[in-house]
Each structure stands twice: as structure tokens, then as C-alpha cells.
Image (cartoon, rainbow over all chains, first blue to last red):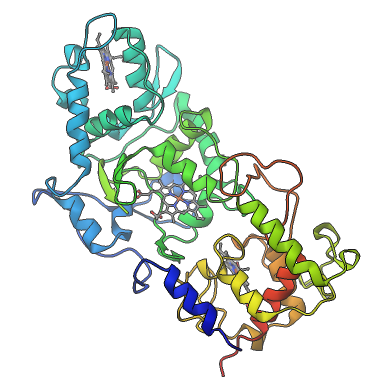
Length: 285
Length: 159
């Protein structure tokens, strides 16, 4: 049969160079700025005993060497530029109370540990909160300022600045007590096969991590590196926006950033990374 | 828009078949092993059209998950499913038709999507827009496209 005409067209369409396919996570070591050695592989947390996964692996291991290198040095990591923007916002007075984040929290290092432990239960409000929800609570109730739209650029930049304070600390979200129901809901969502393609998060990130799906090297879909700077769109990307993109790719009706479903899913996915170092802002393609 | 393209392509491809002879997705009958013995259109598949469907991201996108050695110029063959380079030697048309229409009939729980199915979805979307599907859901491939891909797969032989 004559494939020539067709394959020639295809070769033209393909702008990206063909990469050599090689499965699995690599064995490189992530050392930040030549100083902090990150935990990028760890024993799976106990709650994952009933899954295929016995080792949890950062998405960093599934990226090309050049992409990996960008994350090892803060001067190369474009995400750090947005962290600086986040820091400027942190110090900016807004709202009717004439306060900035810094007025109450002072130095950003007061935020150390936040990224490692959120989403987290807030006792007074009786709700599970993501970092963005907590930031908006401070804006609305303590600053008299308008809430940021979920995953808006300004919110992601401040979230990244907060995450950067915890880099190297192990992810350690609580999954029981008052958050148990949300965690179970997140788990349910993780294994639900959605859309016309009928794929769940687990179809790709649990059953097939290490494999290529077309040009993409599948990782475990961990969120210890969020917000992530993506070379693809040259900005920081939030967890919920990433989830949304992945659900959309199953040809499904997605949930919205900030929805109850994505908050629950964030808790569950984050708990699958309990033990990995916080890497945000990480660099991905 | 993707969906319209699919529908137009489907209408065009099915042009040769009499609409009355086309087996609807809900009427496709599987054997206990997950095969479909009868052609879905009665019109022999066109392997060259089948190859186009297999590599088109909006249609079969088979190479996203399968390596097909006979298509060396198509970049990025995936590894999620088994290599298909000798499928024509090891599988029958009935098996392939069944696998394409709904692979879960042969491989329960497989991640391979069902290409000729229109119901039973959770949160079906409108193509890749992230929005809810509107109206009746079209199968990912038309009956004739399934026949075309089957014909293409039958050409995949090692020698």
C-alpha cells in the first residue's frame, strides 16, 4: 500500500523533533541551588497500600534533563520571577483596612510549612481550605479587599511565593478526622473514569506512569511541585487548572477551579505525595 | 469545531453505505469473547483511510498509545498499549472490530477507549472543550471509520 503521500504530510505537520522514547523515572538527584537535596522518591504512604504504587515519585523525574536543570538553580527557574511578583503583592496595601499581607504576617518566612500541610481543616470556619481559600479569607475578612478569582495570576504568584518558603520540607497533609469525608470524595474522583474516553486520573498516573502517551512522558501526577512554571505557557500554573486540563482531555465536562470537587481532589492527590519534598515553584514542560 | 468535522467526515465516509445497513452503536452485537462478527456497514474497509484515522489526534489517535512500526514517519508513538505492528497476523477482523468498538468487552477495565459507543458515560464532554456534551452523543468513530481501521490493522504484518 502507498503511505508515502500521507506520511509526507505528517512529517510536515510535526514541528517538534522526535525524541527517543525511554520509559520510567530517571535516577537523577534534585539538589536545589547546590545546597538543599530534595526528596523526590519516597515509600508510598500507608493509605496507598491498596494501589499499584509502592514508591511515590516527583514529576521532576519524568522531565528531560534540560527541563530538570532549570529547576535546580533559582536563577534559571523562571518561576522565581513570579515569586518576586508574589512578594511585591505580599507587601502591597489593599482594601478598606489599609493593610498588606505583610502588615500582619511580616516576613514571608512566617509562611514556612503552609505549602506542606495544605489543604487543611480550618476549625473556626469548619471547612477544608486550600492556600488560595485561606488567602482570600484574609483578604475579605481581614483586609476588606476583594477575593482573588481562583487560580488568577496574582493569586498563583502569591501562592508560589508561599510554597517557596517550604521547599525541601516533606508534604504532610492530614487525611483523617474532620477532613476524612473530603479525602474520600477526592479518592472517589481520582478513580472515576470520566468523559467519552472513559479515563480516570489513575488510568494515566497510576497504571501508566513512566509510559509515553503520544509525546508526553506520564508522571504520577503529583502536586508537590505546584504551582508549576510550564515552558508551554511561560507562566505559573495552579493545581486546579492542571486538574481541569487533564479532565478535559478525557473529553469530559470538567469541574471548575475552586469547586468543592477540585478542593477534595487536591487534598487526595496531595496526600499521595506525603513524604515528597515541596518543590513549588517547579519547572515542567 | 471538532465534533462537526467528525460528523461531516463520518457522513462523507459512510456515503458509500446505505444508511439503513449501518449497525448503530447500541445494536452492535458482541460475542462472548468481545468480537463483532458482522461488518458494521457492509462496505469493505479502506486501509488508507483507516491509517488516517489511526494517526489523527481528533479521531482514533491510536498511535498515542500504540507503537505501529509501519508508520515510522509519524512522530511520537505511545507505550500505553501493546505494539500493533503484527496485529494483522494475530487478530481476526471480528476481534479487531470488537476491540475497536468497545475494547472493554474483551479486556475488562482496559484503559483503551470505546470508539463505537454512545451511552453510559460519566460527565461526557463536548469534544475537548471541557463543557458538557449537548444532545445525542456521537461515537468517536463512525461505522465506516471502524471498518477502515480494521482494514488498516489487517495490513499490519511483520513481513
